[in-house]
Image (cartoon, rainbow, N blue to C red; front, top):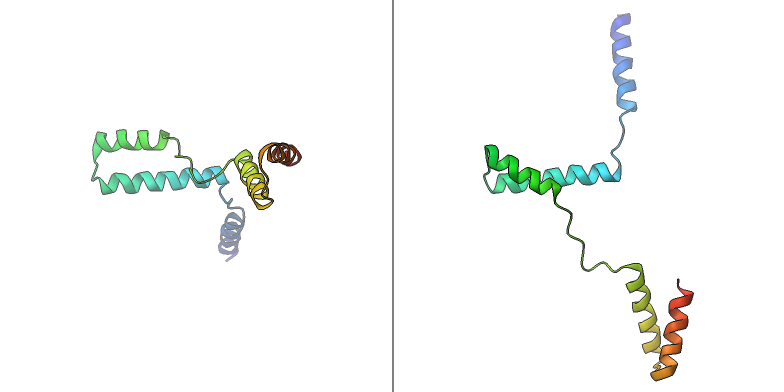
Length: 104
């Protein structure tokens, strides 16, 4: 009876210490899942599957082209502000310069 309770408490402690994956680990796990699904869809087997999986896992993720860099976001915001104020010519250049410098 005592050994059963010790065994049970060891299992509970092991469950409590289970670590959640880091963002990098979670991303790698998702990549593995995606590559496996692609290989299954293509009905790949043996060496062909190994080669595909190797290349798939080594591939860099395609950057999201819709996501703007911080500089692009800054430019977009300053452009919108200049348009709202209907600035033109030198006045717009001065405003844009100041806007981009203060946002940095």
